[in-house]
Length: 354
Image (cartoon, rainbow, N blue to C red):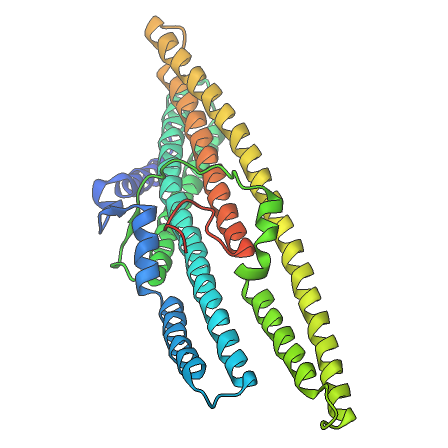
């Protein structure tokens, strides 16, 4: 016999479950957007990109004026040229950084949405476990403690589901802030995950012209070299030339440090992409195995060799494998976005060439 207090708790549990699983409980407030559309919106609306573009426009005008001015000195012309080159790279960097932020925000939202589906199924499985425990108790094949434990598990699952839905709202807000899209934005399905085909050596060869830190240090070296050239004569004090050479040596050391740091960061990011790609292969293999098991169990249910409860558990295992595969896919995308920032070029296949 079930104690009246147990029935009361179960009634509250059933009511909570009904609210959690109701169609209106997780109504999407906006149509899902694709990752490509989210990236385009972020590139168009992002403050960092707009600021970098304004700085580039200003640098272009200033450089044009200096190069056309017959009275402008060599140092002023070089400074204007360096400023323009740096502004061009900074705009690319702002776009890549915005790309990375958007991909991270989008994939976080997509994970959160899929986790809601996983936790919803988990609640359904745990609800069935409570019902099974109740039936077993009635025929004296389970104890009241078994029913209580099943109810506690269900309560925990319901809390996980509620938290998963809260995470969706938080992730949606972050994506909206990054892209300027409407409140309640939802992520659509991922497309094909790109494969990295560019070699590490090829990416390393472009560091000197693609990264802000390296380009800035290169410009400092060029300016210092010009200072030495202008001071290396009979009418400039020797101390001025010595100071210029010291400044050049410092600038060269700074450039060397920037190049080494860039190469190290690039190598680490490249390795992360390789690791993420290998883990995706594992996740895909596990999903395939789980799908095969589910198909087999569905046939076994029809033949009467397993119960509907057994098949639901198999379905949960498949759903977990699918979620793990999604996580692996998003890890690859995030790793590619990080590599793009480290290399100074877009390797994600999203958003075009910067």
